[in-house]
Structure formats: C-alpha cells, structure tokens
Length: 276
Image (cartoon, rainbow, N blue to C red):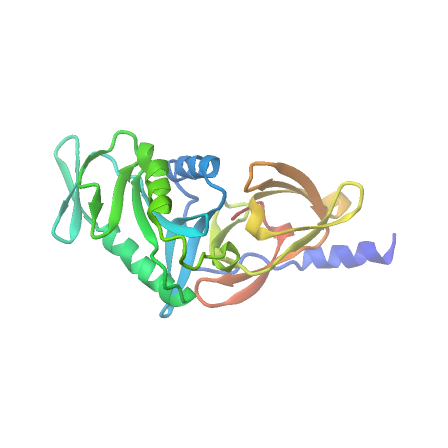
C-alpha cells in the first residue's frame, strides 16, 4: 500500500469531531422548510439563519431575502390557533381554552434590523416581515405593527415583492457575500452545533478525479456517505438553485466560527449532514 494510504488513514482516524456546544437544537420545523421552498421558488437570493454578533452572544433571524439589492428580513412563526396582540406581547388562543402569552416577534425583528444596520454599516431602510407559517393559524392582527408587516404564509411572497417595489433604489445595495449565516452540522446522533462556516471554498474532487471546490454561499445541503474501505466520503450536494451533484473527499474539513466565540476545524468524515 502506498504512503498516501497511511496518511489518509491517519487523518481520518484523528479527524476532529463536532465541538461541544450549549446551542444544540433539533433541525428546523416543517413550517420553516415550507417557507424556505416558497422563497427559493420566487426570489434569486435567499439566505437562511442570518446571524449578527451581539455582546457576548448573537442575534439570529430565519431568512434574509435580497432582491435587486433590497434586503428584507423574515421571522417565521409556526404558531397555531388565534393570534392577537396586547401591549408589548402576543397572545395565542388554542382550542380547549388554552391561552399563552408570547414574546413579540415585532420587537425582536426591529431589534435585529437595528443591530444588522450597525454591524454592516447600512444606512438604507431594511424591511421586516413576520410570517405565520401554520395554515390553520387565525390572525387577529393589523397588517403592520411598528413598521413590521404581519402576514400569513400565503401572502409572504407578495409582501416581499411590495417591500422591494417600495424601496428606494438609489440607496446602496446589500452584497449577499457580506452576510453571515449559520450552518448546522449533524453527527450520527442527529444533533448539531451552530456556527458560521468561514471557508470560501470546501475542496473535493469529482468522480473522474478532477479537483473541485464547493462555495458555501451556493450550497444548501451536503449529505455525506462514508466509504471507509476506500478511505473517502461521497458528498451528495444540493445547491441553492435546486441542482445537485456528487463529489468526493479524503480529508476535507470546514472552519466553523462557533456562536460561543470559539473557532475550530471540523472534519467532514465525522459528519452525516451539513445544512447551510
């Protein structure tokens, strides 16, 4: 066996696992996934899990749509029942007399937009929209509160288009490449740590052995099929435009800027799925 075989074997056996994180969650919600598909079908640039450093932590929003240089921030709520607003909070009334007081997504979205403008040095107006994803959700709300639109899922696309149409086109456009967004890295246990992948490309190669690279900005999923007998991994990649391809790697890793402030390298050979 060649020296490269033992080198590869050593790297795979000593590959870095997922870093320990306090931020562990189950992946997404069906409502959020449905909204993501809807946005991808209608807009050119949809960035998921946008993050802004804030103090010792971070702020996060579900989606940022950038259309014709106009940024629109979206918060997705999968709330059921009748939703109303009272003072500085929202109210949820479910069948059976269940009542809950909920934190206002309007205030949270406004706070995120303010922090986003400060972080990126943006002077232009940024629209904010709260989308209620559940089809059986009944909104007892005005169409807008404190400058933030409140819409059901069926009106999300039209609300974004209206925000883009009404925006001042003379203001500086927001470059999507500047936007920080989270990745979710899954191990065999289906848990993930959240962080920002800072690599501009992930090296790999095609089936015929040609060098290739993956730009995280244009990747939505990487599903990893381990092939230990061949000392490589098979990467099934789904891009943000809906196309897909198959690539391979021996020892690729990604640089993850964790949301607790740590920076680490995580080997793809220790993962099952990466969601951007």
